[in-house]
Image 1 (tube, one colour):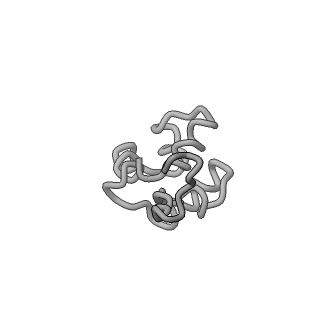
Image 2 (cartoon, rainbow, N blue to C red; image 1 turned 90 degrees about the horizontal axis):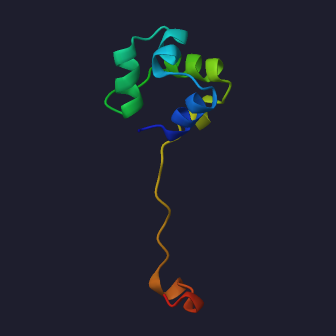
Length: 81
């Protein structure tokens, strides 16, 4: 899933994906493609989703990024690293 916060928000509202798509006037197939990252939500779609779910656009569509790796010299010796 490209947007885990969006998926979480949908789950909190206990909505099926087809229900969310209908709320924002999207086809179910387009919503699915956008949610999986195969295509992008338009700005208008993002705003409608945020309004419908009650969360900020920036948070809903925040991309996941891995944490920065700690250099070996900064590793915690107490953990045996």
